[in-house]
Image (cartoon, rainbow, N blue to C red; front, side):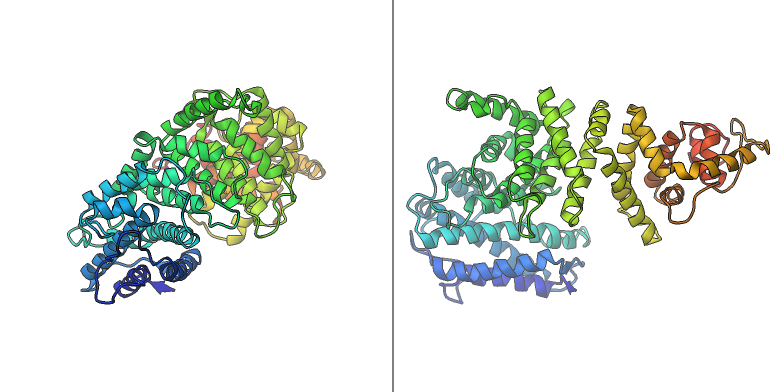
Length: 561
């Protein structure tokens, strides 16, 4: 694996500078392009290679972080800042070179971050119309590669470089300010938003709005002070939610672009809960503008409805879902499901979903659950369905039962339990793998007696019940008791190795506390909350800690409950 050390970081930053300075002299430390002159062809070609190389490395996880200890670290920091500032200048120049040249004193680079912000704002606020009108083909390709590079640069810095510097000593911070400051300033955030509304001239034109959407996501994704401030600016200062809603409801968009917009919506709703209400308000305004001319929007009154309609199209459009390996609809479906979970309409939205909307969601969820697991893409969609069902109303239990949704959920539990047991040791991601499905099945079982019986019959099969009941009777007649518990068999009476009940009982004592608690709660529900039945099914040794938490047996002093 490649290790991020100053030499490699310098190489990436300097190679970006080299690509951006394709037509300038090697001695020059900054661009001095005349007004309206952009070496689009040479910069675009070199920049595309840089983008392809870095994207490939990021996708395959080639980077690991390491503390910067080299004496060249300060120089490397300067190279990173220089490359980001040059990239920022060229983006502005590609959009509106006249404003940038005037603001920058005849050059494309601004001397300070404050000057860069003024230039960014001037460009963003001067482009009320279609930014692409009149741009040559080379300049369209160049702008696309510049925006792509900005998104990749912010991703690389946030995921790789920033963590490595944060691991350094607090008094040894080589960045006096964040190198991505200019790419995340208020003017650039507005520019990214405005480019979302651009219309590409032809179907062959580069998808500039998509790359701008990626830039917006990377500029607001993270927890450092600069990124948190950028996120707040998008939501509170530049009507970013309005721009995203407009982009989300635009028709006939390429799937990769719509996926990127959805990722922005999901991210903002997750991190800034107030953004859901702002998006509802923006959709209200959109409805008012379109209802007189187009009845399609009349039934939509909030973000949830827009997301559900997008989900319906994603799953039901042709070719049959999920399509071939190049089809990204499965990613889109998962993103929409996660967005619906993040919205949590009962708290974040001013609207309650209508019965029609809830029925639409239920239909799509059952359609997804009943899909064959042709590959991992479908399984990931099903896991997103499970997460959404955590917030489902109680009446959904009967709906899922009537529409064939319960057995697929049980199958997910079987698969997730088997996957964890097969690893033979606890991992940090165990809870994320198994806890949601355990909570969902427990919730559905408590809400519907038929669902409870269906799950119980899968865990404790009917064909094994006669033998179990005979062993249980023999155990109870021994009259060994502990408080309210009428049995003290240390091991489960009937749990053959490899069966589902054997796997679940093993997870009762898993080292990850949320895993064992969620499994115990489901088994407790399946046992009718009967402590004796619980012991007989799972064994006193496996059950004692959980029963102690419930206050049914006394735990030894000092045991954590």
